[in-house]
Image (cartoon, rainbow over all chains, first blue to last red; front, side, top):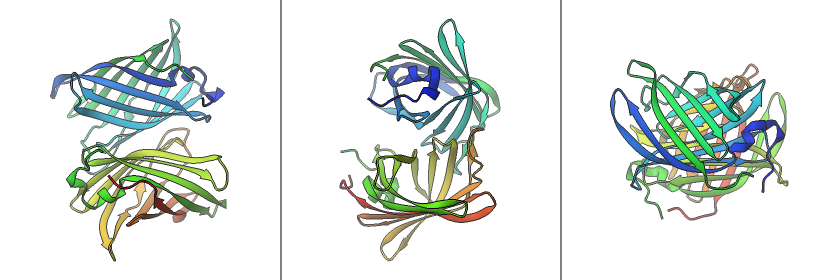
Length: 163
Length: 163
């Protein structure tokens, strides 16, 4: 079992595999439900590997995927670096806090890097809540003139014990 | 075995696992040698998953890692979206060409997105040459005032047959 670097602090609790259900909505699209799997992997270094996939709920039709890295907190702030097959790349800053015993990663609005073929999403904002064996998140984005507007919400359960 | 989306065209030959050796150099550092593994994975969609790891040559000491996506060519151009645990994110455009039967992916200089904790690397430029069961690449970067300067070169061999 790979050692979790001590600099990861409260983020160590993310290590493992998570599954659950989410829902997406945006002013420009029909709402949808999805199934999700997320893996946070330790490497012994002060960051975690991050891999996420979603499927349209009740089907095996792939919907979204993203991969990247969660960099351990310094001065109470972690960093999430993400690449998406849609051509979007992200480097978010997340403030690490505690709320009633849960670890809260509260992201700032973050402008995206876009390949020429990517959709013109302007920015995203993420919030993760790690509450024991439950991981919840929300994601907001700015697109088509809708500023910082809620897009995704999911609740995941731990399926593999933390390292 | 996952189907390779026809829009990937000549990039389909990348699908598989690659291993080999590389060397790094830069005006600001001591040169170094590394062992590398790269996986390009098909998903049935018009992009490939990309995952790379390196180790200091002759050791099991991890050196670099990056993950991301290679988006299939449109108008002769592919797109590589990459996240690094160093806090750097990239969305490169690669011109897809043919040179003596090899597939050449010739990247443009690409400004990087950086998390606050990342090193101030300004831009990167990549070139891949897919020559049957051999994959070669070069990487240039701009850092510390050294414009578009060669940093990495590696030669990898296919270790798992293409899908």
